Amino acid sequence: MGRKKLVIFIVALFFLFLYFSFFPPGLFSNIIDPVIFWIIILFILLSYPFNTVFTYIKSNFKKRKEISISTLIYFPFHLLIFSLALEKLLLLFFNYSPEFYHGEVSLAFSPFVTSGLGFLFNLLFNPSIEVLLPPYYFLSITPFAIFTALSITFLVSANIGKIFEFIRSKRLIAGVVTLGLVGGTTCCLSLPTIIAFYTPLSFLAYSVISGEILTVVYFALPLIVIFSLYDLFKRSLKVKCDCK
Image 1: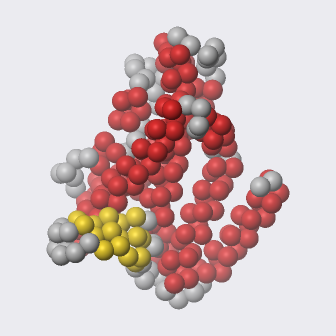
Image 2: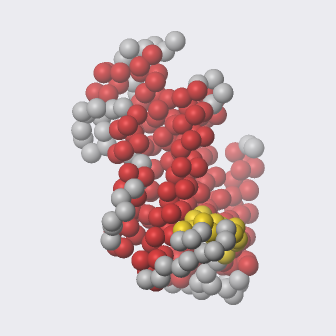
Image 3: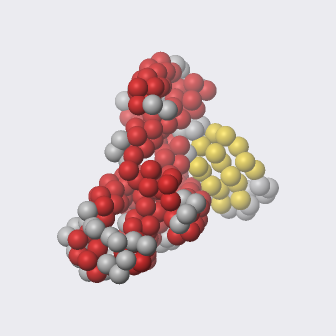
């Protein structure tokens, strides 16, 4: 799709998003509208500024196993952890722990009004694919979770690809010094570092966490991680690497 057609497509989706936002709670405002919003955001990010990241992943996906494997493994793992985290977040909010006697997959939404704070909640929580796992757990997969999972997956895979380039070219030390870690450190850049410090999964792995902290981790941390990983990838592009 050319840039001009892409702009027209995004603008058309935006007006469709505005149109559906005036509908009363239901199919159009609580299901279709949030999906359109996150599609718009994803298209904008992949076109600019994440175009270099997406192009790098696409051009190396079949040729480089570390990129294809990290992409295929991280995306479903991220969705699983974040879906469980949302389930726990909702249970903390409503102080209710249901029991399920059979598995089920369904599409659900909360009838938020699309004005004020309800507008934000509508974009973050609606719609959701509910996967019931007897007897106590359910996965709640939202467009926001899919958007952050795709964005972070591409960025994690791209950074892992650059690290392997440094290793192959024997320039890992120079790459680490040039890249550093977001926050000013230049101690150690490795695959565990990428997973542990630049993704929210390690924070969500803890079983004991307050509702306020979990709320911040679930909604704010993924966005911070996206910008941090993108900054790391931009730094990696400045490192000259004679890769074979």
